[in-house]
Image (cartoon, rainbow, N blue to C red):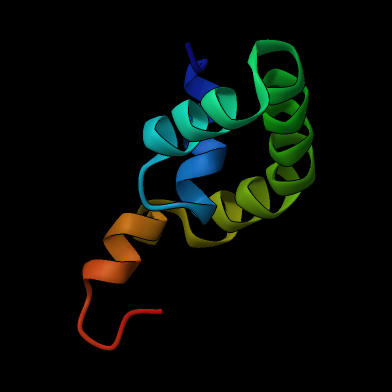
Length: 72
């Protein structure tokens, strides 16, 4: 359902990208849900890509950051 790029971008802002996408598609239907998903990825991609460039191997997904002591 999600492309690798969509999953990676969403993983920067939600704990479980697949569950988030499934919820959106279920809540809004396939057409509106995909539009919402694509818009969210488009908005979040620049921040995700900047974080990957800046942090390199130190980059952590939202789930990884949440699991850290004192996480977000």
